[in-house]
Amino acid sequence: MDVIYPRCAGLDVHKQTVVACVRIASGGPALQEVRTFETTTSGLLSLADWLESFGVEHVVMEATGVYWKPVWHVLEGHFQLVLANAAHVKNVPGRKTDVNDAMWLADLLAHGLIRASFVPPVAVQELRTLTRTRKQFVRERGSHAQRIEKILEDANIKLSAVISDILGKSGRAVLQALIDGQTEPEQLVRHIGRVKASRAELLEALRGRVSAHHRFMLKLHLAHVDVLDQAVATIEQEVGRGLEPFRQAAKLLSTMPGLSAVSANVVVAEIGIDMSRFATPGHLLSWACLCPRNDESAGKRRSTKLRRGGKWLKTTLVQAAWSAVKVKGSYLQAQFHRLRARRGAKKAIIGVAASMLTAAWHMLRNGTEWHDLGAAHFDRADATKTANRLIRRLQQIGYTVQATPP
Image 1 (cartoon, one colour):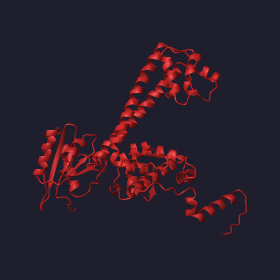
Image 2 (image 1 turned 90 degrees about the vertical axis):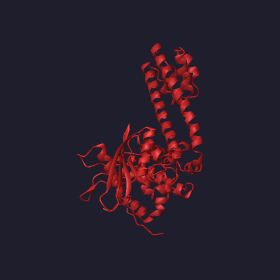
Image 3 (image 1 turned 45 degrees about the vertical axis):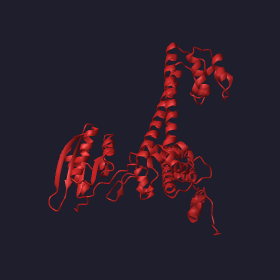
Image 4 (image 1 turned 180 degrees about the vertical axis):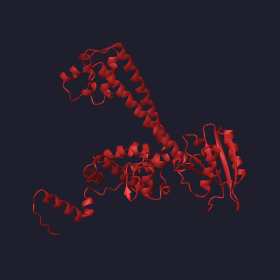
């Protein structure tokens, strides 16, 4: 095979060491030099100097946990860096050593056989870290809410049966009253505002057996919830400052149905705003694992399940899609009902999420706001097909139909 990069290097990165292989091709047999460096800052600087001494231009490394990031930060700006998916560059079985892995990566890069993974700019990476941490804290807060409800059920307090949010204003007031030692339903019901339940139902739901242990556990979990709420508020302030260069892009995305300001920030943090990194919307959908996998043998499609991956972006888009399909008279709602009739709700919502990401690609590339095609778009796109489908349906239930063209 032809050599694409004559002066390149492959790095096998670990927590404490990085094995580097320099590959120099100059007409004859390729020269390979291997050396091991520590992953301390001084060790990585020595690695950069060693690579420059050979005139290396391109460097490849695997995405191994977070260990590749310090190496990337030190070498960035000095070399053309390529981040490889470990699943795409597996070595031949039986030759698994650190030295062989580094040599294998260098050989693959030299012949142009590695597809680089998407590594966003530093500003987008920092924004992505903030949005992901925020999501983790919100999930943790939800776990504490479930534990609080479990404690209340153990005390036979049916608060969640009469209040939709036990951590809302009324719910927090009742929980604090329980912690303070109030157990009489007549005292607890005073802390509840306007709800659908009657007073008799409220009194019955608040009549339980709360012990000192229950009060201690409630106090413990509520303290954690307060800390998480404060952390989320702090992160949102930091996201506001980090979002400044991307504020216009996030504002454009928030015009799409279902995408709130928080969801738009997540989309920007995950894919950035430079859509030239993805040649087509299909490339972006494949990167986000929102398109059917290719699994074919002997001319038969064996599976169309989504590939695993892209969990941060995928979950956000699916959640936004469920909100978008509730907008009456919208294109996304019409698409959901159209797909659900044939493929079911789960595959339909994935199709809507894929359409939203496709629209985001066009909106970020062209700098345009969302333009809804309307619920009648599919009928207008193929009026003949729609008419034939309705005629067949009428014939199936016993009607004789005679269609007259308009």
